[in-house]
Length: 360
Ligand code: CP3
Image (cartoon, rainbow, N blue to C red; front, top):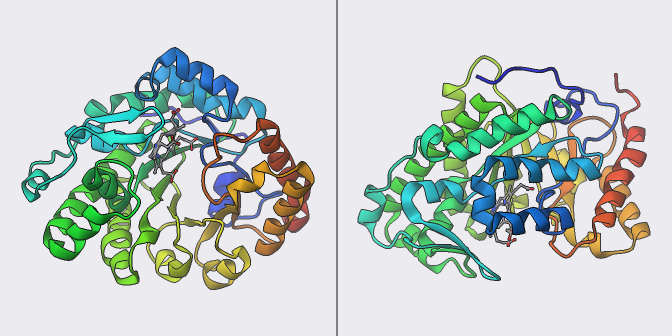
């Protein structure tokens, strides 16, 4: 069991619960990554991305790197969503310049029946060890976010064997063999629940589920195959969890059209990509959930004056009051100059107190 240390900066957790804050908390998806020269150095030392993920000392080091540079209000565990299917025996490799690939993708219905559900403290011990190590190093400075891929998004990689443009195989599975698809997603929902639960037991303060590919589905399929299983994974965590469950965020790229359904799924906050209007999203669901996002990540290639204006616009769209966590609509692009990231974070610190004058 993790030793509890009081958090010095809890504005991220307060915003997720829509409690008053003095300014809008900010962290960024992929805040640790290739745009940071110090990340590239550790990555080189590790030899490969997987070695980096599976070596707790190194994963801990890169988790903390962005916090040394920027005034961020949360740390996110350094790992990847694809470590879970790797632990289910699919054999993950990252091919230079090509992205992730599984040595043993799911190719037959019988592959699904044979998939094991990993015990996270065994097969994913390196993840929970990293959580424990990061917690010790953070010593309560800011909260730590744990995460998983959503069952649907994990299924896309497991069936396609890697990234995909058209999702032909996995959509074929949904249309032709819906029962097998449900069997796969049920298994993944259980695996995700166990995995998130182990991260919580190891000490993460909040959890986030990445449904990167929910937006490629039809509305009916999104509800049946993506949202239903993201919800089931969360229910699995909550059934196991203690008295005070940690807040949970659901990020769906392309999910702006289904906000009402997402807001009814039990998650405390919804992560929005940059295509959604934050003000409209707040009017639609802001009485039920907090919202996280949603600056276009490519704004970070623009001059600082533009970044500052765009930050102000996002804050204005959400408007006054708590319930907003500032973030990008997707991850920091690897080619971005770290100084621009600093400009973004500083702009949130500078402009956001105006929106919280009723704060504590
Ligand atoms: O800082 C953080 O956000 C925490 C770490 C994190 C990574 N991946 C590190 C990473 C998190 C939360 C993820 C999640 C993840 N991984 C998602 C969901 C979020 C999203 O981006 O939509 C997905 C779809 C993946 C799968 C994945 N991992 C892909 C497609 C790739 C290759 C693309 C790329 O950027 O190279 C990765 C590799 C990866 N994961 C890197 C990092 C820092 C780059 C690897 C490297 O150093 O070469």
